[in-house]
Image (tube, rainbow, N blue to C red; front, side, top):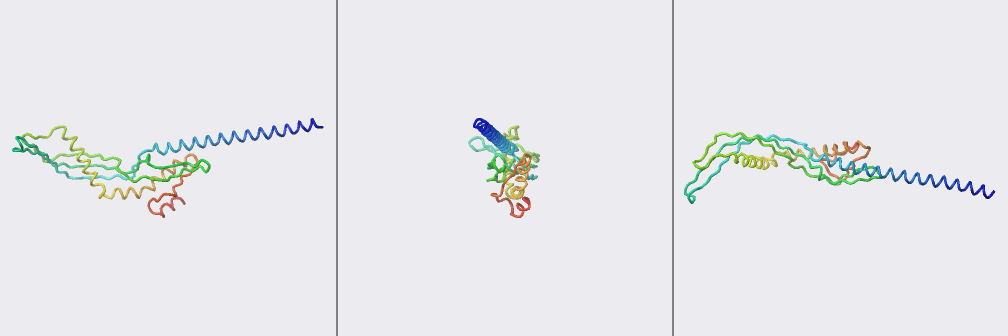
Length: 208
């Protein structure tokens, strides 16, 4: 009887040990997969990098003048031109600057900070009118590079008063919703309740 009981007890203990080991390794494997998903997901969000939300077209007339002096400043020579600047400015967000963490147990990506909108690019095209060269001061190929840089800076100075930044801030929620859709591709959820984006009504309606 004792040997039969011992055999039965051994079988029971063996079954429990096997089940415990199986459950332990299964949970460990599942957690490793979940952590891997979390890491891949964070990298996927960052790989989107820069997100353009607003574009603005500018048409500006820029007066360019350059004066050179010779002979101890006794003689000066001026070159000048009217430059029409047609430029496209792109405003948006650098998603590499977002601050995100992951909660593996609840399968949540937590967005704790979202960057301010910034100028992502300015692409000027120049047209020259009324070009006048000085006696010893004429336009050269190098002037095109100088004028392109000056035109870009000129447009950058105009952007704050154009309203593009304010419009881009209103589009911040759309950027967050894009991130939310990326997170949803693997069955996770994006938690951005800690942020204040636009007005509260828009966030509430988006979450609902």
